[in-house]
Length: 349
Image (cartoon, rainbow, N blue to C red; front, side):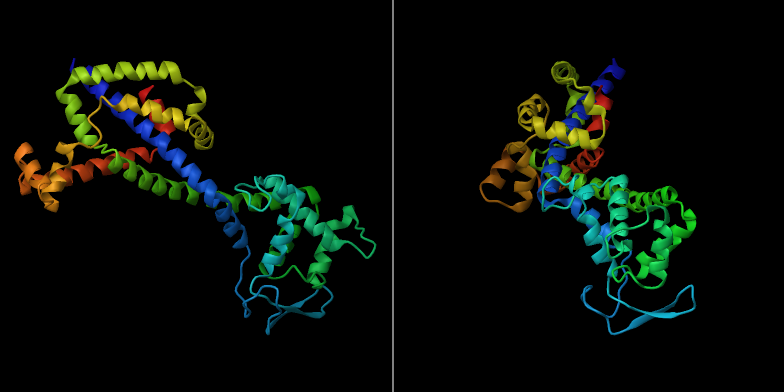
């Protein structure tokens, strides 16, 4: 009996977190799409791949300083530095049809660029740089020609760290074009993997923030909900039965997939989620006079404070304790919601 009561409470709380997580996912997806958060983050990451600060404030203006390099023939070539020569190269790479094909909107930076697309776009850019006056190039000697032109500073747009990286990849591939593409794709993967790890950590904080807002707005205090259901096990059992009805109606295997798939589900069913939020009504959540009484007492709102103190016998000491307890309960709710809907869907199933 005891184990059943505890299990019912766990299922009830898990379902509550799941509903809130779905709502948070929808909010986050809407905000991210509106601000193109992922796209802007990817653009910044690509921009910083070979960023180097020079002596000018405009990447397209020549710098006053210069860099000298020695060619394979022993000649000394002068290479003007810019604040970020890589930006000009990146602009041309991103202007490729391989990048345009993954844009959701024509003038919007893509939220994700597959490694193969970035590699193909970069290769097209490099091929343009080695073409002769007739617009032709030797596919079999592409890397040899590219290396020669880079060492002789014959490609004005490629400078600095990007140039150094290309020369390194050429040497590493030993002039094998297929291997060069593999090395280039591997480099891109490593750069974006770091972005992915950082983005996941950032999203956790964002989901926590949205979860805290919803917890406060709907007064979803984990400790209070658990306490009431423990004191009234019949209500917990009845609520679990309602959850079973929800699962039978809404069961969808895609809900256990990745967050990106879940976002699509949340966007398509947000109105339905709002209706199903009524399923949580039997739980002790939401605001009423009793729940607001401690805040009224502490804030000293006239009439309402006196009414709350008289009706619910709320002293100042009790009010402060209740408020602290609520903030702690909201914090736990927000932390649980930040784990994501897929996690809680698996738990209550």
